[in-house]
Every structure is written in C-alpha cells, then in structure tokens.
Length: 109
Length: 311
Image (cartoon, rainbow over all chains, first blue to last red; front, side, top):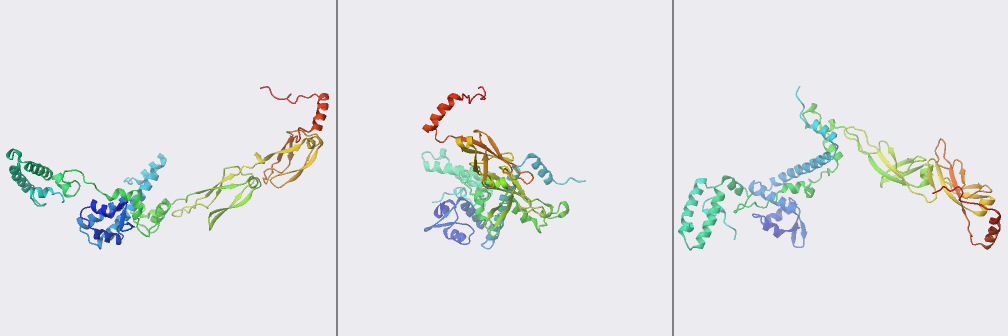
C-alpha cells in the first residue's frame, strides 16, 4: 500500500486537496488508515490517468466521471475478452480452427 | 528546488522553433565553451548542461517524447504508471462498473449479449444471442452411499444449497464410481438451447463385512469347532437384515454356503450371498481338548497340506 504523501511525491502537478476530492467522488478508491489514505498500485496508476485527463486533455469535473465510466466498461470488456481468449487457447486445435474459420470474413461469391 | 527544464537552460520558450533553439544554443556555447573559459569549472558545468539540453531539443523525436513526458531531461525513460496493465490485470476488477454483473462466467457473458442486442449486421443481421444456441453446461456432483444402499437400491436427496436439491434414485447393484445422468438438471441453455444434465458420480463406502463379487455378496463367517463338526443354526447379517442359516453337520473351515437371493437386489434376478466359514478354535490351550486331540490324532493320521500346491 502507498501512502498519500508518497503518491503526491511520485506524481508532479497533483495537489493534496485535488486528490482528496477525487477520492470523495470515488473516481479513485483508497483506504482510510488513521490520518492518511492508502492506495494500491492500480489506484496510483488510475490517479495518473485522471491527472492526464484533467490537465492534458483539459476535461472538467463534469466530464471526468463520464470518461472514467466508459473506460471502466472498456477495460471490463477487455478483461472478459482475455478470459475468452485464454479459454479458447486451451481448447483442442480442431475447435480453435473452427472458431477461427467462423471469425474470418465471409468470402465473396 | 525543481531541476531546470532544457527550455529554461537554453533560455527559450517551450514553443520555440528549431531555429530559435539553435540560435540560443550557439550563443550560449560561444560564451561558455571550456576552451574560452579555462579554469572556470562552473562555466564548464553549464556548458555541459547546455549541450545536453540542445542535444535533447534539437532532435525532433526526442523533443516530442520529452514534451509528452515520456522521457526526462537526461533522456531517461520516465516511470509511467500506465493504467492499462493494471486495469487488465488481476487488480482491474477493483474498478468494475457498479451494478453490473460479474462476467466471470461464459454463460453470463452470452446471456448479457443474448437479448435485444442487434449490433451485428453481418450474417443475416441477427443478434449475437439469436445466432448462438448453446446447450447448457452439465453440472457435476459426487454422492457417497453405503454398501447396503448400493446393493438394495435407494432414493437419496442431494442438497446443492439450502433451497435446491436433486432427488437421486440409486439403482440396485450400482458400481463404485458409476456416473448417473439426470437429464435436464444441469445449467440452462443459451438462446433456446437445451438444458444440460446433472452428472452424479456415486461412491460406495467400503464395508467392513460385505464384499461385492459381481451380483453376489461375500462375507466370512466365524464358527466354532463344535458348530463346524456338529452343525448349528446361526444368525448371519445380510444387506436386507439378519437371517438364520443352517451350518450342516461336518462342515469344514473355508466351506462356502449360499444364501439364495440375498445378494445384489436386482429386479430381474437378485444375486446370492456367499458365506465362507472360518473355524475359530476359541480355546486352543484347553487341557481337555489337548488330551482328546493327542489320543485322537495318533489314531487318525492326516496331512492337512496334501493338496497345497508346490511352490
């Protein structure tokens, strides 16, 4: 777990009150530990993502949850797709070929 | 104090053109070149940093990467907390969209795309779920029954959860690890596909007394020397309860007696119970018995191992 101060130290251009607000908005999850907040690596990566969205793409507070919500859906689908691909990869070659055949574009004529 | 950016070192704006950068560098290089400033280490240090800054900013690719934050002033890769590997890794579920089902299951996934999703234009324009008809998965269970239940057949209730169960008919004479198939008791199908089956592997618990031999059941019955020689009526356990059996006068140890119809309770022709007698002397040190046998053996020579095979 990574403490709040360490996160501020790692990510330039992020200020304490701003990050506090993101946690309050539940854009990023954190655990309250006494006086400080603790984050996981995935949370820190997400904070950097939000930082990029807010500053580099200049999106305002209204737009951020929309973008995050869409991204969360995309990543959920990608995780699911990966599971499907893993499941497919462990199938007999015959079956994999049949699926590959079914996925290929229909031949014209 | 934060380190100076290469733009600050060269004294140009971040929006400066390549030409402006080159001019700024040349001007500083002339001022700070070590050959023109012998014995001035701070000039030499600044010259080095100016050269490094120019090196970075004069290369359009490096300048671009620096501007995007991919590399730092020294050209080293900046650590990135790129979200994607986290989001797609094991931790990613932390940010699963709220109120959505956990699509851990292929069936849930198909179900989620199964109704009203008409995004697909190809192959007749049918929705994913309409094209996809899939039989439900079979569900696998194990059920342990005792020896008598397997021999006689029985009805068992297999609890899957507090409010879900399967009534399983154990056929008489089921074999250990035999699999019973309950049609339509598996997972529901997708897109109108048929429901899967429940497959129940039946384990028969070993019994200390009964042993299966095809459709027959074998047991070993201890009898006394007197019962074997003089005959007796004794109670014998069977899978359907104890029965009284007659031991004929003059039975030997190892003799096999048949209890007809007391084996595996198959409907057509039940098997038998085969009872192997095992003579137990009981009091081998009894002085009366010893005295009798000494007298008796001398007049009745007998080789008990005469039919024993040669090693």
